[in-house]
Length: 357
Picture 1 (spheres, helix red, strand yellow):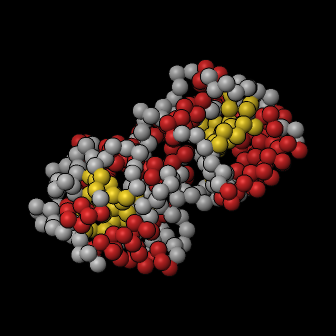
Picture 2 (cartoon, rainbow, N blue to C red):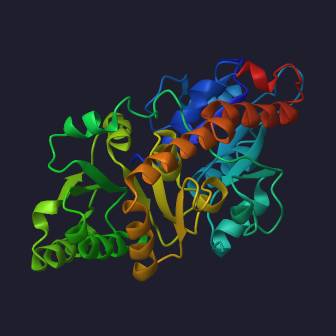
Picture 3 (cartoon, rainbow, N blue to C red):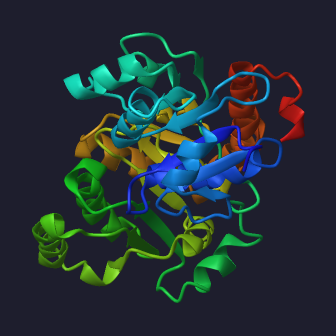
């Protein structure tokens, strides 16, 4: 374990968007850099440290005298890094990735001030930090996992759902994800789209069970319950297949840190209608790869969906353009290389090059 240069904490028991981003990029980074995880297991094969092992390892710097990197992505992980460094005198450089696009709490601002370095994933997220990040590195997506179907029509038929094409939304069932606006828009549009089926994928936690019931009642009152299919929480490995089957994905949260759903759909050759939050304006070219609409605006969302769904050939062209966009600018290899290059600048090493990832 002495060759470990970077420690990735995972201090959230539940699988979350942050967990997914770390699990996607870390194995690529680990090809050329010594990386280990600590905390709850990540769903990828990385070396793992126990807390006692971590204390022993970081009691001393690397052979070149530089402290190891402790890369936090949550408040609890910033706090853990601070305790390790200040209380246990661990030789660490504390790095925090900030994706939130909102004014941070006093506690978060305090923790950020204690970090040695900040990283952000978009210019908008960076604008909410008290001090500029050392670097801005957008997330990427694995183009081998998320890719277009050879034949989207055949892929849809394989789903076993009715209709000839699907319109989907993926994410937890809660108001902040824009699911209400999505349901209301589709309830207006489905009578105009007899071949369309709506797919809703995501977990409903107990606090939002009533919210889901109200949405289903809204749908039932309009006689459209057979047109909506609620699939609940699916295994992570099944999600790429759904991105390939769907003809259109809606990514319409009211507030988002980055928004990997948009990238995953684009990489799958699927057009996206997204709200102007997260990194969506950075990722998606309005009218080229899909459409951008204001947050929490059912009228605007309905109009955008009606426009793109009226031209099925144009919808496919948007999906193809979206795939090309991701290939050029937002691959997971590009993200991994950029983070490793930044790590090496902190570790005092120039032996790792971006192309080696």
